[in-house]
Image (tube, rainbow, N blue to C red; front, side, top):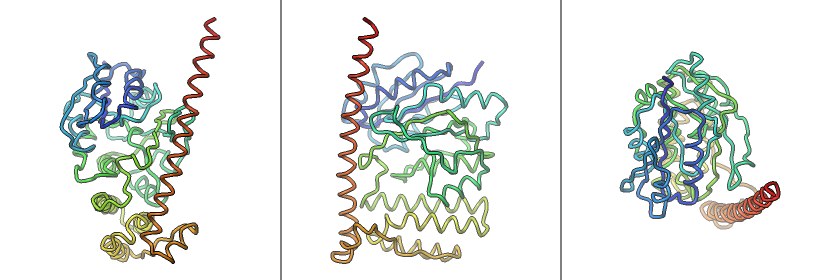
Length: 345
């Protein structure tokens, strides 16, 4: 009998996207699958829409709001799969995504190998998704994968991974303290328990850009900044447990520097703590630079005002781009419908 793949979907206020997400999950060409949707106390129609998809292999349940990490833990506790596919409710997978990865696994890949795939960014039109290969799109050892992540400031999107139950259980549950980057920290632990990564080209994931609406968006939230700092310290601990040479320490310092723009100057306590950590690693941190477009605001009104102006203008720009992309999506949909009518006639 073929292995069972569990597709686990945490959902919160995702009424706009959940139907498309479930259609792609149901249509996965890997036949032996179960789909578990856990609604995390949504206040919109997410639960009602998901219920319409219930079947003998798609289960929908709801709970009081607990956050993304706890919701994923609850979904995993319900599943029976030999392999686990996490999928956020606003994202999509190519219909053969899990099948391509399972084919590689069935060719003799160890259950202790962490399988990944490619991912592309989109807003409303997945067929226009942009796939940009990163240094992580390779078969890599555990230490090499973590160092590349820190050196190049790159990551793998949550749904790219296909994880054996054995690996998921060895890694332990998602950390409910983390309000953002919970996936990054979790898959670091999965990686530590693994024998390395196996990249499967063509197993595509479509990652929807949500901007400020994304639950992991930090902005000026103290709780999210503190959670991010916790995740960063854990990342560094994990890498040093695998390799603690000059390159690994330099990668950790680079990782710290790349994130300091989020902490300075609002959380000087965390910035100073990061400086101490960087010094202990044989490096140092500098005050992060702002773009020249906002440097004059920094000089006149201070760094906090400059960062808020940068955040505000970026939000406005993002909103305009999203609305434009949505309008183009609606035009494309009408053109497709009109073309289909002409073909039918």
